[in-house]
Image 1 (cartoon, rainbow, N blue to C red):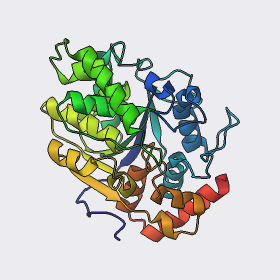
Image 2 (image 1 turned 120 degrees about the vertical axis):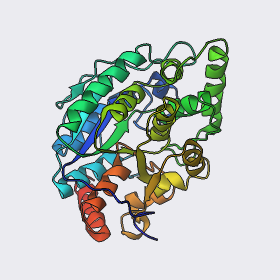
Image 3 (image 1 turned 45 degrees about the horizontal axis):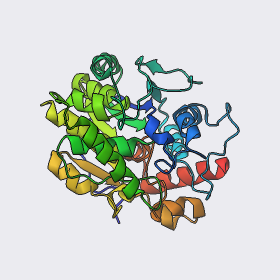
Image 4 (image 1 turned 60 degrees about the vertical axis):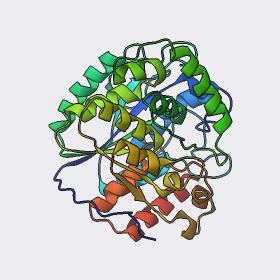
Length: 336
């Protein structure tokens, strides 16, 4: 199978990778997120992922970068691509529980609330405006921006946002066995809460049901003057749904075939309904002789912190699939 589902015609001179970091209290609901050793520690994951990608190691916590089953975290894949391409990544704090340990652009947001009981992002409009400011800033330093995210529990907020926007969406999961019933139960309660609420704008949808990453990403998309690639699956499609509802041009999306092929989700169908262009990277992890990476092919993890987009970027920059694969294997083996 081809490394990339379709060869894009993107011209660039100054590429940049950026990750938006945020928390949603939905990740602390048992069974929602696999992005941490326990539900409470999922709130720490964005900080640790940014630390690993920036410094090449986790130093602020005694946590293995692999999952308990030995599956390498997608942060190691993104780190490998930053080393391969020589790009220095930038991170944005959209709203985190714990302080950052690496330099970031601070959007001055706060942790996303549980949308079953209260508005999730009360200051969504402010975060959108700050995203626009950040988008203009990043435009002065790049003409190709690959924008990833790390929000544990974010596929569930993505489900709520897409459903609230009217899409018949099913979203992916970092678990091998997608907790669909749990996510649907959350959406049912969110739907009941917002049934009497007038959602007069797409930002109202985020305010009621989303997470802090979303308005920042939408703001960046509105203001960025170069080519924007949203690196992610369900969560970035939710951002695209918001952007479309705002009447703005849609950026392209890049993610992995492991997200595309998740039978419990309907990523290609949602992308078509939104009208967005998706590129799917097939890194062939099942053929590299690494048991942990092969677990991606079995449905574990699938994507995260812009890993699919980082591989997409490396390919755009002229690195051959075997160079990308070799670098990933070397990096994850060193971190094991």
